[in-house]
Image (cartoon, rainbow, N blue to C red; front, side, top):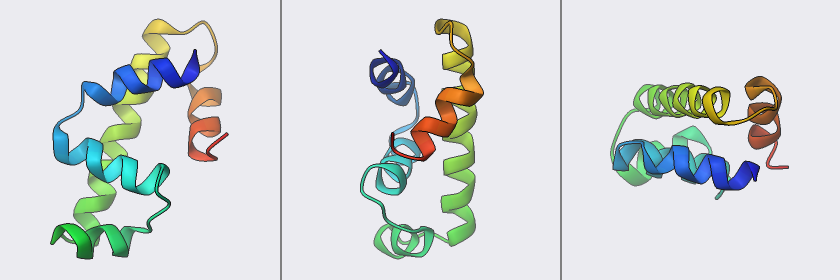
Length: 79
């Protein structure tokens, strides 16, 4: 259920934001690796990840009965 909700939230993100988030959380690339691969600054990568987490938190708050913060922690730990 958590993964399904996260997937739906990710689909609502702009393509580049989604790509950066997935590279970070699913492919375990660090910010510098992502920045170099996409030709953007590390700061830009950080901003996209921050936006992703805000959108996911909002989505989980709206559609899940479990605390969004707990779910985000699990997501960030790849559990």
